Image 1 (cartoon, rainbow, N blue to C red):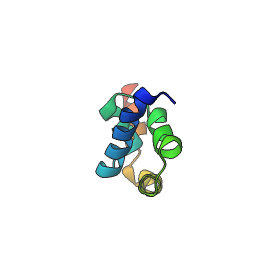
Image 2 (image 1 turned 90 degrees about the horizontal axis):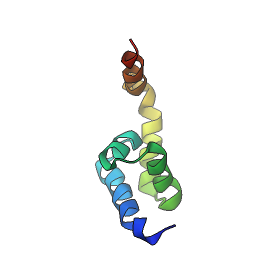
Image 3 (image 1 turned 120 degrees about the vertical axis):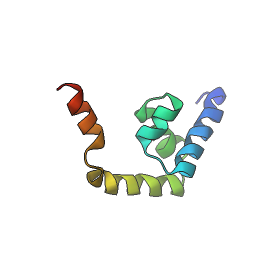
Amino acid sequence: MDKKNFPLIEDVVNYYNSHRSTVRETAQHFGISKSTVHRYITKVMPNPTSEEIININISERGYRGGKASGIARNKYL
């Protein structure tokens, strides 16, 4: 891992944990991809708080009403 990216990784993980946001919201805030955020919080700087937030978001995604898929679906109508 390149050392110059470490401050960004720390910022992403800290933002995710402090705002208890979703991977999508964090990615949008920093202008990076969802897969990059997910990699940072699960593989590069894993911690119990991030793991807890991921599990909460996974358990709640069905209750969010398909927010992400609804946006994509309406885009093509």
